[in-house]
Image (tube, rainbow, N blue to C red):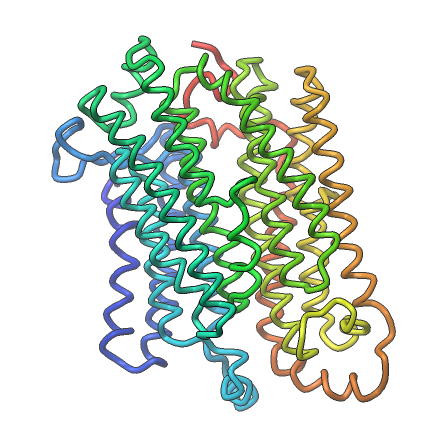
Amino acid sequence: MSALLVLAITAPLLGLVPLLLFGPRTGERAALGMLAVNVAITAGIAERVAQGGRALGYFVGGFAPPLGVGLRADGFSAAMMLMAALVLLFTGLFAMTGPGDMTRKVKARGSAGMPATFFILLLSLACALNLAFLAQDLFTLYVALELLTFAAVPLVCLEGKAGQLSAALTYLLFALFGSVLYLLGVVLIYGLFGTLDIAHLAGLMARGAGGWTAAAALALMSAGLMAKAALFPLHLWLPPAHSGAPPAASAVLSAVVIKAPLFLLVRLWSDLAPLPLTQVAGPVFALCGAAAIVFCGVVALAQERLKLLIAYSTAAQIGYLCLMFPLAASGDGPWSALAWTGGTLHLVSHALSKAAMFLAAGLIAETMGHDRLSGLGGVGRLAPVSVAAFGLGGLSLMGLPPSGGFVAKVMLLTSALQQGSWWIATVVLLGGLLAGGYVLRVVVIALQHPDGDAALERGLPDARECRWRALIALALAFGAMLVGFMPLAPLPFLDIGRPLTWTGVMP
């Protein structure tokens, strides 16, 4: 069954063949079919990890590390792969050329279907994401990050507008800066230990090898990942890139692309770094996360454009994962495990809710002809399904029941209170209030009466034509709601194959 790990990386690339050889229509359907296959493969990996109760492993070419490269799927990586596969599939469905003459009319105006290039990039993202979630070698992870970058940057400027090109260039510069820092850390690690396999390195570092040089290497790699994930204060590229891209591209960028470097950040400090060093670094990450939640949340409140508001919200929400680090690495029994589960569930629920919100925002902008908040009065009557998708996604950001964000934030809040981290608990609550402010601001405007019949007549045709795509956004929002039905307890599945100190059991 370990062959599934190889298929997860190679199968998405097969969908590129019909896109390159046949017409856009045929290639688009083949790409969507391969994205569905990707969901089936990742679901199969998750099912086998759950049934076997242990991580799946595979050595490329049959050579074990340090000579070979290992692939490994534990509960954490399996959950992330399945989440990413689902978001990519739903986003592809949203971007496809829809049935009927009405959708073709919208496509002719350039507001619905995406070019074939989008589906090529989508399949490339699926390959890069699966490699990032499975690779156990630091250099292979670098390759995955580069593949991810060069598939994600073109998504920002698909329409070729001047603002998009500027945002894409800024994104590329930050990403390359992050790559240089990460690669410098990898070079230091290889010079110290002569291997880049995470399992081998973890054993060496646990025995005290490397000293401060190893700590400096981890700091360099972490800074590089923070730049790629747009974690405060390296978040400046994210708002223009995510707000300026087409809606389907924005959804992918916010929901899954920035999750890969965050995932690797967790890998570095849970799988690789020794526990004492993680306990020193944890508060630093938490401070960055708290600053992201507060600063970017306040800035989101001040925005006058809907997509820019959602983009700053993304920069704020990723801060919650960083609050997990000192709590999960404390080794405080079940409360440590609760924080670990809460941080992971936040990644999943945020991906689903943010994809729904960006897709809904794109449909709202299509309906009204713009995304300025001051001119969105009455859009709830013109595009009710889109507004409902936005509102349900916003519930998860606010942390209201029964959303996934509620479960995740309650877990983080409970762990913080039980471990005496009152300042973290305060930031969690403050972040929920700020999210409530900017989400409710949009909803209140949307539910107002339209300015006049002219606006109603102008909006209705687009709303009818886009209804089937609005249902896709609504399905993603309901997915974020379903995560909220998880029990308020550590999930055993996420503990499979994870370091003992991060699952609440000390070795």
